[in-house]
Image (tube, rainbow, N blue to C red; front, side, top):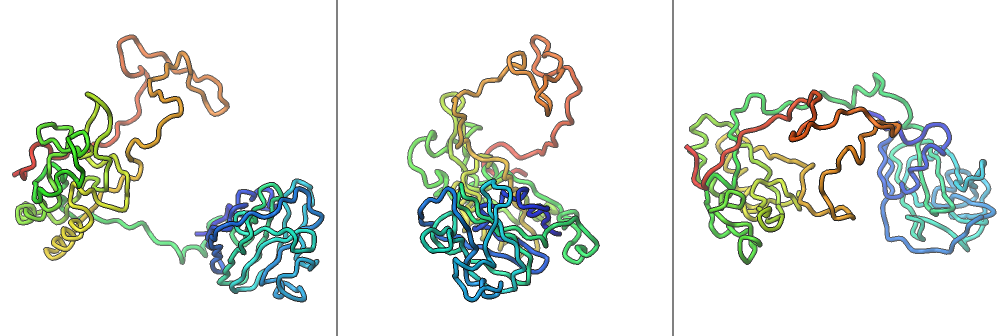
Length: 360
């Protein structure tokens, strides 16, 4: 698959690459890597007399030597006077460092993030590149003509059919907190305080009940005897323990208030417990599936207005793409849905509820 959105015709349509100094680009001829380094502020220059691409590649491009701000060969141009300067050349494979220098001297120069640091550039193969520099943002950009074009038959060699897994498995889908409590030391998830802090209250269906991964490990004989070949865990990453206030407060036992997608919820036993479950299942010839729901997180971002009430369409009508009012019928009094045909419902999945003892 080719990346073909980076350069089409003039660079004016590729200006979004102005900060590409910290981006990796996959090329048909190899790879370009521009590594990020701390930026250092440099002098401002609103309207330079000249701008040149300088660096350890100038010798390869025909200059008398590298790091020469006065070399005419690598001088950039701003043909339309819009403040974005550009220079195009075929750059040989190799590892380089680049930046731009103004007015044929080192008095003012710009590199990574518009700062003073050089920009590393690595090419696995020869590539036609266009370098840009914007005099407002001071950022160096990069685009490759080799990335243009649609999918072709030549791309078949680097593509594969989607992986289909699990079609032959017998799943045991389990809400870990409501299965079995195998380790009471993690019931509070390492937190100290009441249920409003730890989220633990086995008497309330909206809070953690103490079930954990160790509880699953302790009952693998039972689960496997059901004919199970794979366990599917409900979302298990670290959650915000409690959300809401007053009667609207509840805990993240369900796993949908994620704060860290790299760690398992301490209420469930953490990463070490998950690794133990994985190993125990593999020893039995069974598999482990994780429910990774990246579109669900804790309520950590709020609207600036601080209000979340429903906005009536009479006050703010729905609009179509050109922002003209759409003709949705009003909701009948006393109803909670529009009379028009609703969209198909989302698929639902049953999950075990109840106490922290295993369900038989």
